[in-house]
Length: 136
Image (cartoon, rainbow, N blue to C red; front, side, top):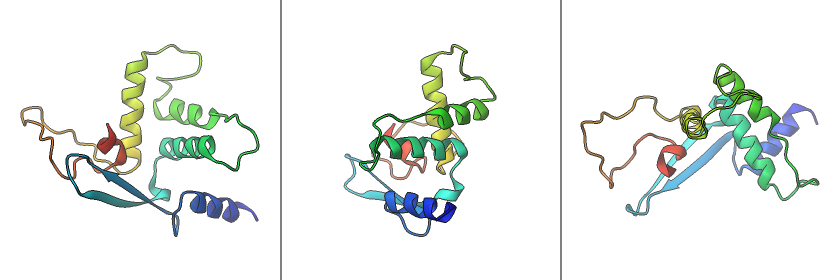
């Protein structure tokens, strides 16, 4: 089948069409749903590796119950310029913050941070433009 078969199975497993994923987020304070369609090909390498790891972890079709995170570890090392590398100790909170930011930007979220002078509105629509921003 080759690479096209693997891409087709990934797209089918994600419930997508034409290599695009439909990401849906909802806010409990708003009764509306924000939907964005982002082409999978435009995801950053770290976002692709993270999504592959999660799909493998939650796939009901896996023969083995263990999952190898090697690709994600390598993507983290490359994306962080070896700031977070195997064998080096780092602050867990800083790593989690960095990873969430990389995933946010990697799936099409905005890079610009809102100014600190403005008050945050709990009922605002839109926002950062990614599922990471909507969730966290």
